[in-house]
Length: 450
Image 1 (tube, one colour):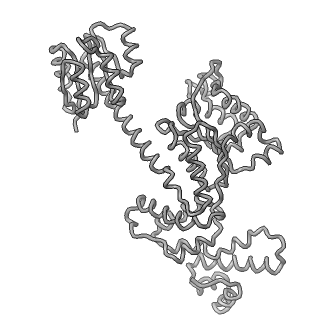
Image 2: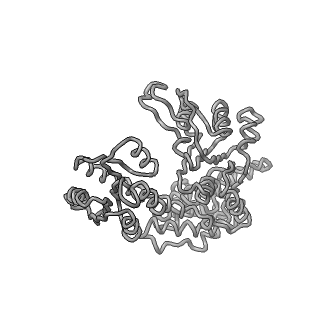
Image 3: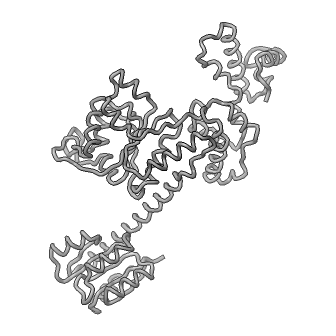
């Protein structure tokens, strides 16, 4: 499909010249009008990709035309041209949202290059908008599964906290969905059209994390060959999500505290303050109060980030969510694996899901379902049925020697059955016992044959 370019200029000769230059490119469809009011109507009624307009025109001038057009069509790039080129009018046009500014007489190649860049810019804007829209659709509150009262209450808290700019501390074990909560807070806020930037504080050393967050100046350290923006600057007007803040060093915590107080910081090696407008969301799987006692986390920072507190419970504490969550994940997997459209989880396995304790939480459930889709085989779910490893890892210290030995035997036999796909004869060979002896052991230990 050709890109449509609108030329607005009261000089007919200039319109013809621009049209002739642009029509050299087969991918351009050029429309022309000779006054700004007509130009506004054409932008309103037609799918215009880029506008080229004169600055000085009778009636509505080009600057006013630009301002009026941007009210309803902010993403359409506008290239300003004039025979009275001066820095003041150029700066004024750029401040009001012009993409580029060319002075007459201009070189045809200069015009073509400007139009090409303008179209690339528009495509980038539309692509980003589409991606943000797609992302936001994944993090709608209605998509947070709520089989339990716990999750209904959680959604209510998110709905109340999202429209504010308050700092939110999200607590919960690994895999419970803390980042999903953070995304939902962002995409239901007035900052949704701006970046959501996530940083895992546990993934960097102290020095690297400081550079990652605040950026650095050229020459700040060996290898710093140019200025680099940090995540705080990249997230400007949007949301910065600091995951696993409990793993951040004490020294860096002090610098974070200063940023939270006035949203101003210095790049590494810099002397000029950088000011940003960022909403902060933080998350941790650590007990921050315990870390404060051990002098591993600053108490003043804790109270600064603990404005709103959202605790995401582990999956084992919300059994009512497991089945609807599994069914929700199956729907998502069908989009990812369209050739598995008929795949469903049988009632048998869904019942076992409710009895499993899910040490890896939602992430474990999602990974297990994805593995089943990849293999196109429900037997993948056998890995969590009557898993004796749960018994072996039990922290109940009152268990006697005999119970501990039985738990180990159960795990040993169960693993052999798993590896041989529950072929009892083959498992007996692996274990070095007869089939009869293995069946006796299975019966005595309560291992049911699948």
